[in-house]
Structure formats: structure tokens, C-alpha cells
Length: 93
Image (cartoon, rainbow, N blue to C red):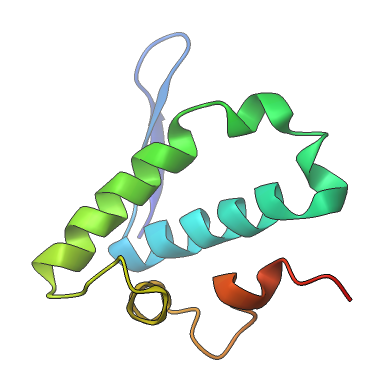
């Protein structure tokens, strides 16, 4: 079960499963990389939230014996294998 609470006036704390963190990371990554949306959220992309999530997940991947430098293993760890994965997400038609 996920929960969110105020930490102070400007920050909140989110508590959720590793699987939920993977989904949040993937959704943010995909959304921020889409051409139509990227300009709208340029300031968010400069925020360190996505990087913080990525570093955390890469550490969890290493702990699970996953080589996150290999796209196929990273995508399998994130649970995006078989969906439109990172390697095909930015193809121009």
C-alpha cells in the first residue's frame, strides 16, 4: 500500500513498493522523452527527481544481480520488456 505525507511546508514523502517506483520512473522517463511534451516540462527534466529514481533503481538492480548497463537487462528489471521499451521509444517514423 502506498502512502504520502507532508515532511514540511515544501516537501512530501512517498512510501510505495519497489514495483511502484519502477512504474513511476518508467512513466516519467517516457513522458519526458516524448517530443511533444519535452518542451513543456524542460524545467522538470532539470530537476533531480528522475536521476534520483534512476540511481536508486540501478542500485536495486545491481543488488538483484542485474547489469543495468545492458538495455535488455535494465528493461527486464523495470518490467517494460515486451512493451514499447527504451530502445524503440524514440524512433522516428
